[in-house]
Amino acid sequence: MAAAGGRTLGRSSFSRATSNPVTSSYGAAGVKIGPNGAAFVSSGIPDLDRILGGGFLLGSVVMIMEDADAPHHLLLLRCFMSQGVVHKQPLLFSGAMKEPRLFLGTLPAQVSSSKEDGRHRAMGAAASSDGRANDEGLRIAWQYKKYFGDDSRAEHKDNKQEFSNDFDLRKPLERHLLNGQNIECVSIQDADSLSGLQDCCSAFLSKLPRKDAGSLTAGRIAIQSLCAPQCRYFEKDWDMVSFIRSLKAMVRSSNSVAVITFPSTVLSNSFCKRWQHLADTLLSIKAIPDEDKDLAKLLTGYQDMVGFLHVHKVAQTNSQVPVILEASTLSLKLRKRRSLVLERLNQAPVDGSSGPSSAASSSCSSQGSQLDF
Amino acid sequence: MEEYGGGDLLSEAMGSAARVVVVEDCVEAPGAFVLHLLLKRALASGGAAAFLALAQPFSYYDRVLRKMGCNLSLHRRNERLHFFELLGFPGGAREGTIADSFVRLYNEIQRLVEANRAGENAGQFTVVIDDASLLEVVALGSVNDVLDFLHYCFTLTSEMNCTLVVLIHEDIYADEENMGLLLHLRYIADLVIKAAPLSTGLAADVHGQLSVVNKGTFSEQRAKAQKVWNFHFKGKENGADFFYPGTRH
Image 1 (tube, rainbow over the protein chains, first blue to last red):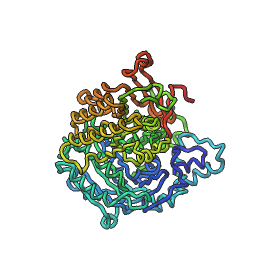
Image 2 (image 1 turned 180 degrees about the vertical axis):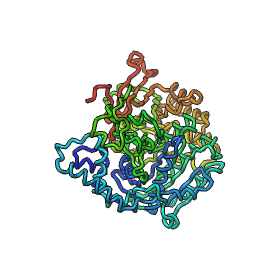
Image 3 (image 1 turned 180 degrees about the horizontal axis):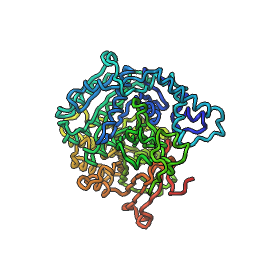
Image 4 (image 1 turned 90 degrees about the horizontal axis):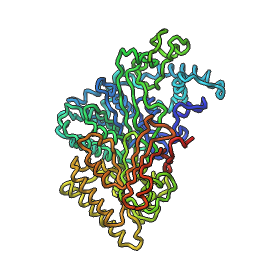
């Protein structure tokens, strides 16, 4: 998908040798087939799907390291779960809370399509008038590169609406979608051990076997704050890591993806590393303080950012080559305060008085003051 | 290992006649590709191998090695490769304690090594473990059980014509308290291959750096040869490139 941007410009902002939008096809609802026998489901955040080369790989375990200060990992988890509900994929949710069912009430609804069409068309038109006119001689200033990703989105809009949706974090998901759904909720807060959850997962996954055709229903497992200190099994380090290992083995042979968030700071360094090694895809979230003047001077668009997302590892099918991303740290932004976008970080120009570059970002904090190193 | 079949920096650094090879890696620089390479070379030189796979299922290794030009399915059918799929080890069929399961596993390996030695085509036998950190998870933290098992595997290398290759994640053992397994493996190793990231992070052309320490305990010529090697690597679908820093365009 990302390579589509490269076609119009002659250079792509993110290129990955194995992915090829021409050959990818769609299996069951919400499942995209990629090369090498890979099947993806959407993470619920179109930008993240693009960065990870298609989405979350079926049969893989995604682990998200939480930030101790802010609950931004919940934004990712909610989008992931909503995407599954929208695509009618079976969902197993487990959280370190007394009533996990209540968490379902916080799932976001899809962005209403009329507004999204208008926005994409506007972006697409603006970009294409510059881009399509003269491909070869066009040199895009680095700051504007990130906007051209939207151009490809406008082209593949029809396909993308099926696979990956934007979610409006201010609107809750419609009740009727949740009611008719195959959603299982398990609380792990009062559990003495994880064997109960393991049995639930095992039963859930046994209904979703993996076949080579890849067109069967895909399932999603979402586990929130697996090693939260309030859980009774919290002291049992080896049990927890053993659970993850078993879950990974079960997920490998099933047509589903498991997303686990965990507060990495409460684990010892040694066990934190063990968890990281077990992950197929590893992400971490870092919150941004609200009024950090230094950061504001350093980055454009700082006001909109809620945090940083760092991609440590990306799952691959059957390959020993690591995925090298052009940018592994991205900023988490809420576009129009409702949908989650991921953007590459852009450093603000050192001299705050340069005109055109300040127009590109929403606000460049310094108006003439210099950066001191 | 008598021959490595590769004319690259890694085979030069490894030399020959190493009995115990320990591969260390970390989250930023995974070292499993070294295991794949060593497995391929062990099978290519006409020997047999036992692969203890705790990290991935057979289909994964099959596909990866196939891209490297080694057909694991064929070798498994010809009984040159004995694949132990241990993703769910010890699993439901477990009777007794973890130690018992390890004993059973070791007995099977020993049987294979002896059968190989007694056979007509008594080539090199290689036991590959992916990976030792997961053995600890299987043992639920009982390091003694893991050390016992590894020690028994180690005895195979001295008693019979067998080589042991073990992958371990060294960043898990960064703290002082639980370095036991890592230190033990480093001690019994003839060859330690360590994959680490570059200080500047991941790059498209260089995925990390490899340091090879060859203790040369088994070969007299080795005693005078170079002991420590440092170079860069780049993983590819069909293998890996090894080169000195700055020799890549």
